[in-house]
Amino acid sequence: HGDADLTSLTAVGFRQSSYTSAADLACRRDAAISWIQTGANAGAGEQAFAGAALDRGRDGSPILLDYVEAPFVAQGSRHAETLIYGVRYGFELPDMAAFNWLGDETGRFVFSLNA
Image 1 (cartoon, one colour):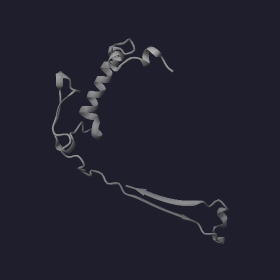
Image 2: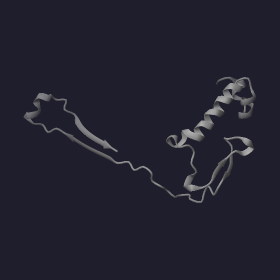
Image 3: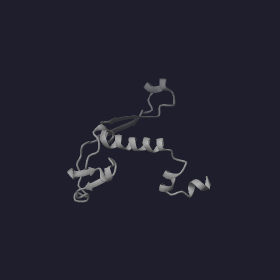
Image 4: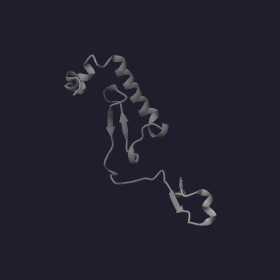
């Protein structure tokens, strides 16, 4: 199934092969940097969980993590920033002469509200 040469490559081998150009690698790197700086969290950029320190820059790369302070200290802790409400109400029309003009296909009526 598939190209035998391609499926046998490791991640490092793929990056070094003719399948991946320098322009492709630069595009992926730039996209990752953009996501970290401004794309994540609806445009606010990357933020550490529970106020822990999160520093990037290992080996001079803006992508590689250099330091993560106590990543599991607040394990199980939750902070709600968004609360979602949902309401759903449904009914079927009773079999009454007043609704004969609708025919036999009255179905079920459902009203939903989400906020």
